[in-house]
Length: 283
Image (cartoon, rainbow, N blue to C red; front, side):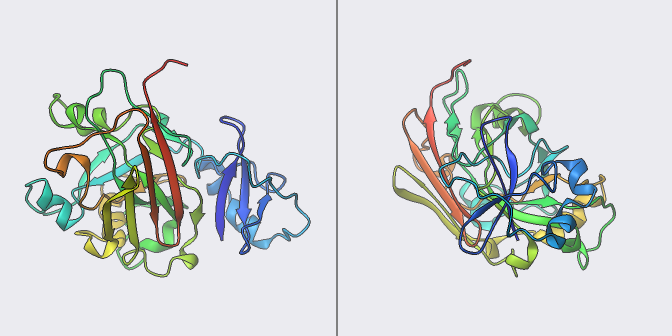
């Protein structure tokens, strides 16, 4: 099953994508893809329902983020061997964990707003997953049982704030528009092996990231098991699994985003995103 959300910001409705690409409005069956609705069995209701008579969604309708305001966005840093190498950093002995503010979430094609006074806004194509039910102390063997689905995430980063300001990485990761999620969430039956997916990113048509999740240092199951030993994972929580080589910070010389740049990215089986960079505005 492929799950999505459509409509103007703040007015999104939940939807299911059929095999032919038709988008079905399922708001009559589930309130939205919120943490509480997911915990209350929203997906089970959809699987049991006859969707054939439900209204179709205009294909021109805006695509929203795949979930509404999760409790946590948990990210894994330096999780691709080649990315750690391009940054001149040692391969971590256990997952590097940081958080990203949920206020950064936006639709996959809404664009990226370069933060005020930023000079080092950088891109990161990542495989993200959404937790489907509460769990803690999960084994690697059973980790995928708690995954609602997988999606594309561009883990936008302000490198100066992340690396050269005191404190934790969260400051460089949480600006508005810094967490586009989508275009849809594919349930695990759609993605037989999340640790063997091609992913890529281009800036103004130039391919800068081109890799596979088989370069993971810690795979999806290991990440879930590790995180669940330190915190309760709840329905709707987003976990982003790290980025491959090819970020702006790792280029020689480094290269960062400027207004008007077009960033496109995608993951095998999970669709594509397109973001146009714009200057900071309070509007």
